[in-house]
Each structure stands twice: as structure tokens, then as C-alpha cells.
Length: 292
Image 1 (cartoon, helix red, strand yellow):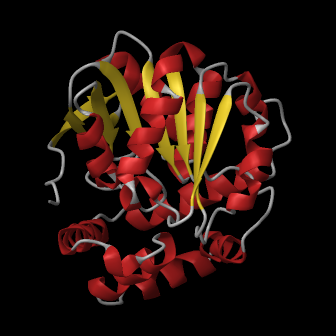
Image 2: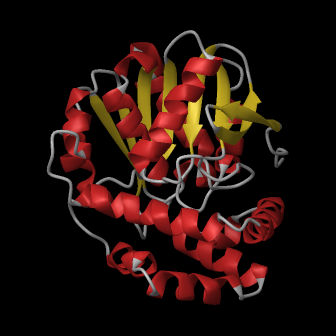
């Protein structure tokens, strides 16, 4: 049975209007979506964990049903600052933090800079500096080029919504034909909503530029330097059929964290929490929960 989306509402977090989906009881948990995604990317996993976690999944500023970023910034650090404010506002104790793709990059910023707010970290195909680049991920920076990016985004936006959604699913799923019809319909609804938000294109391109900038950061707060500060249990989940993040880099990436476990799912692509939520739930329950 395909579950309905987790219900949500809008909150004021600092100067930002943030839409947050919420369910469950127990220890607090925060779920951070990827580039071009939204809080619904965590629907199935949130329902599965709701018997023991108080789950919050925001639409990041500039994405989904949230408003534009009050700061005008969409880079991983800026988004992490908003999430830190959200955690302080809603919870009185550290959270179990989950991040997918760009959400993984944001989660490393949050956990590395605000360790007192985090209890554990689960990264699903995190968009961290490529140790072994993928051909498809090398092509993405074209969208971030000033001048070229907006024109390309406009051309993509003019495609039928069904075509846009299918292209995205072909990129992020190992087996897009297996996506339930209800989830496809929800994705099409979200794509139409995104097209109506005048800030969506800028948010996407700015967020992508922000991720790429971290790839060239060699300072003390570079992503891999932040990873070395994280003293909590870390679970890194990769999809063997991921077209954006190379699963062969998993072991090398894990060495930057003090306490990390790795899982590579053979039939998953870039969004394991959507493709195989039961495996992600089981991995978290076995490899993270007892040690956090």
C-alpha cells in the first residue's frame, strides 16, 4: 500500500517561511532533501520511523512549498543555518539527522558546525566533493553557468510536466518504471507548483553553484574538514546504480568521519530512501540507533 504524504504546515523560522512535514513520537529527527527535491522525498521512511522518532522534514527555503530565502542565499552553509534555527525552535535535545544528495552536504555543514544539535548522521548519496567523479555529475555544472543556466532552465521549464518528471526519475531512480503511480502524480503536482514560484529557478541555480563551490574549498571549514569534526555515529548509504554520486567512493569518503558505517544497495540509484525505504530503515535501526 502506498501511504499518503506526511501532513505539513508553514512555520516562521527566523526570517524564512518554511513548510515542514511532521509525524511520529520519540527522539527528534530531521530529514533534509536534495537539489530540486522537497520534504515528500522522505515520506515512506518517515512513516516507517514514526513509531520511535518525532520526524520533521522541511522544504528548504526556495524549494517546494517554502518561500524564498530571506538571506538571498541557497548554499549549503546558508541552508544549514536555517536548519539550526529550526532545530533550536522545535526541539530541546539533539536530533537524528538524515540528508540525501544536497541535503547530505547541508547536513555535514550542520553537524560539523553545530555538534551540540546532532545525535547521529545518516547520509544517503551525499553531494560531497567527488573523490571519483561521475560522467553525469560532470555535466550538471552547465546549469550553474551565468547566462547559460537561466536559458537552459527556461527551456526545460517549457517541456510538458510529465516529460520533466520522467527525465528526473530516469536520472535518480535505478528502476523508474517501478515508481508507484501515486508518487509520479505527486511529483508532477510538485513540479507544477515549483513552476509557479518565481524564485524557484534562481534557488536551484544558486544552490547548485553553492554545492560546486564547496568542491573547491580548501579552507578549515571545507566539507571533508567538517566531517572530521563529527563525533557522532555516521551511516553512509550509496546506491550501486547511482548516476550522480559514485558508489565506488564510499569507502574513501567514510574515512573522513570518526565513527562511520557504509552500506551500498545493489538495486538503488540516487534516492535509496525512496526506492528502498525498508532497507534504509533497517540499516538505521541496526547500525545507528543502538550507538546514538
